[in-house]
Image 1 (cartoon, rainbow, N blue to C red):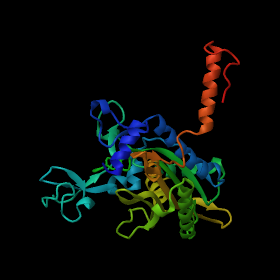
Image 2: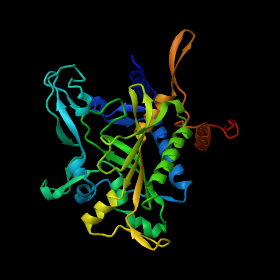
Image 3: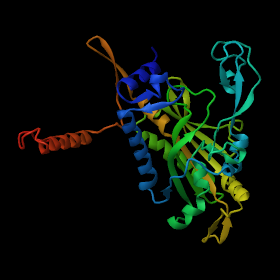
Image 4: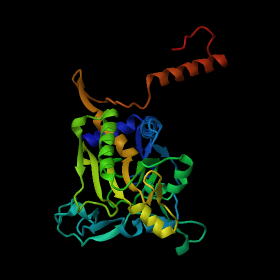
Length: 366
């Protein structure tokens, strides 16, 4: 059994993560979090939210709706460009992303009988209201970022922020991935921690470098081993349709170096597109410069589930005790802390005494 199989088994036994709908055979790439898993997940979110918003005076938070007007996704480019190349293997009948069969071979069975790639949109489509018709189509958001962009002016006025400043959000996103896998690394339903930082054009390169350093330092505070982290710059071929420049913080998983967080210079792509499509003014008036312009955006985008998996992998240790091998998790950020356990025990003792199950004064709380 390899490390990932052992980790999946351990997570189930210890109450971290279970296969969704397991009694019915499970649902591919969907996972449920147990008692310890949900505590660790919430602690990661609290740790991110505190460092991103509560300890800074230049970042505020929002919580936008999952369902948004379809024009949002037309303006953002998701209806047109949010696709993956899809290929089929004629031998084993499996489907894969085009990049997984880049050498012309099926990654599952090695067959050369691979179909030509065709584009597949990753957004989940559904209908709003009782009638399934073209005018009722809505999408489950594939990212939380667009909810921030369309609310730029709504946040700017009441928060009284001036550039540079950021808007942060934690929330669910959904992507109809062609080939999800590696436990909770790539799933179809996941939770994002995103921050969009609005800056004056011309200062974007400087702020990109600052946020690269900030985000790398955050993972060090999270307790991840520095030797397992690296920064990868996107080539021109890798750049997304909205990005002027992009970097990934990568972690060395058992299945290779993979993206942990994306840090992107999105320039004025998003606000310009939404301003053009909606007809609403999304510009910013700079009092000091006496000029009006569309802000540039530096984005930091991390996944809660992927961060949790990284914490588990980084904490994974195998030890031998009295000739027997055992697996332990040396977590830096724990699901539950001693003071929380003590508080719960004190509460249980007090409750038992109130109900007459324990005589008063006979049991000392911790």
